[in-house]
Length: 115
Image 1 (cartoon, rainbow, N blue to C red):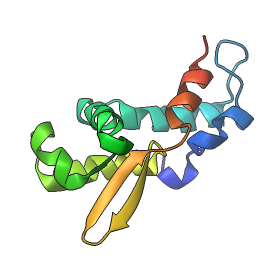
Image 2 (image 1 turned 30 degrees about the vertical axis):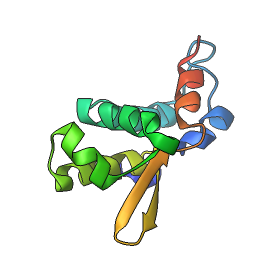
Image 3 (image 1 turned 180 degrees about the horizontal axis):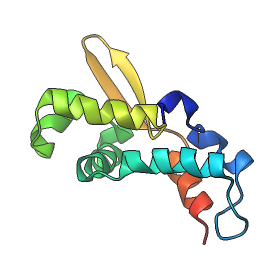
């Protein structure tokens, strides 16, 4: 499913009840599965964790390549996937891009999966 068809994570609360309370529609299930696939990669989970734990909750790509042990193009690819899925926000500053966790992204997934 192209990322343009994904339900933005900040819209999950308005479209979908927690999975434990009501059945999810086919369309919403497909969209949610595509978003969750973005998280289903060890490097991407580590990137989210590293960015979240970084000073001021944001990190430059230059800060992530060495600790992750991957090349800059590979890290950039993973970051692009996370931005497209709505988990990260990107801000260009000069020649570098800085990333931070998108407001409410993790909470939206947690709430949707239910308690």
